[in-house]
Length: 88
Image 1 (cartoon, one colour):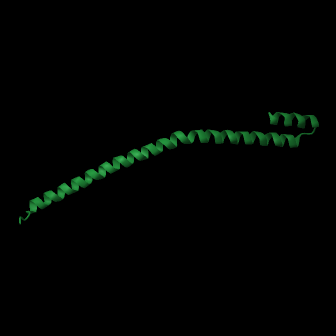
Image 2: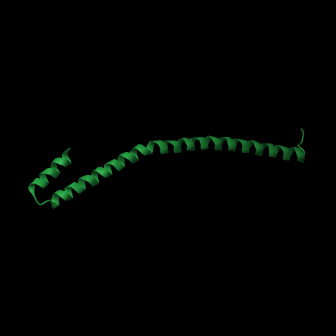
Image 3: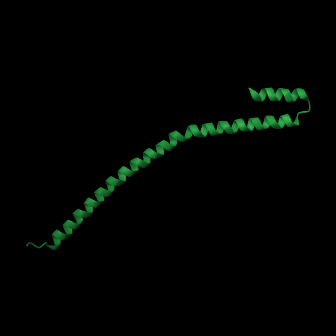
């Protein structure tokens, strides 16, 4: 049976550490690619939802303003005109 010298043991330990470091680097690159893909999805897919939310908020504010104006109206003609404008 052969025995390993101290130099061979150190060389083997260094080789194992280099192999582990290389594997860790590969896994890191893979995960970085996945994170990049996820960030890209967030950037591209969230904008349409943000746009539609803003549009709905603007519509709600517009309707609220029309309702308050309707409540504050003094004549029947003003109320009728506001009702017609809020329908279409």
